Length: 182
Image (cartoon, rainbow, N blue to C red; front, side, top):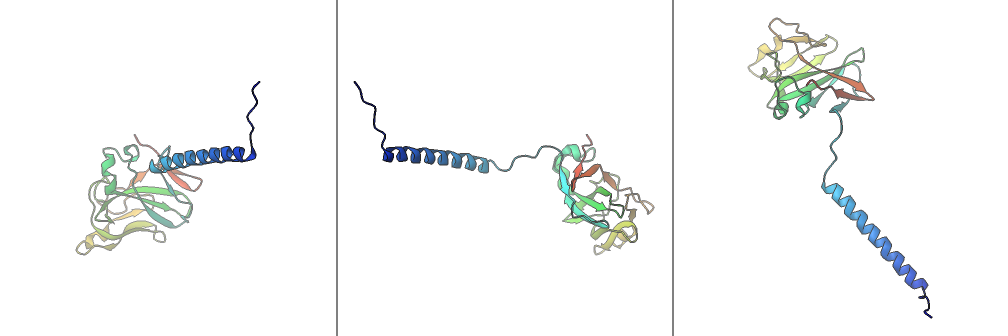
């Protein structure tokens, strides 16, 4: 007749400790693997947080690197040549425009395509009191950049200026979501 093994309290504690250590090592491996993989790619369209964008203010954002959200004819590699200007009008609506960017400055648009390099401008911004968007401070030697003006809706107010390239999007829960154009 065989006798059942005796499970002492000490032996049970040792088994429980080994099991907890195995679970801790497994959890550490899973977490380090997920950390090493980097952040998860967000599902859905790119967005910009605009919850703090008050009426009569604007902000600059980088253009999305996904070609589906860029103007026709532009590739994802060309997104770095664009800047996205988001402005919230006095009516509370958020509007977005793609503008050419070079040497870290937004340029005054000179063609219908936002990828065409613009006229250098040190301060391109909307003026909500005057109700326009324009170059407020021209780069040295480019004083003629001050002649170009647009309405807050992006329509050209100056002869020879193209309309600003509007960006399709909508605001949901404090974020402005871009809409695919392709």
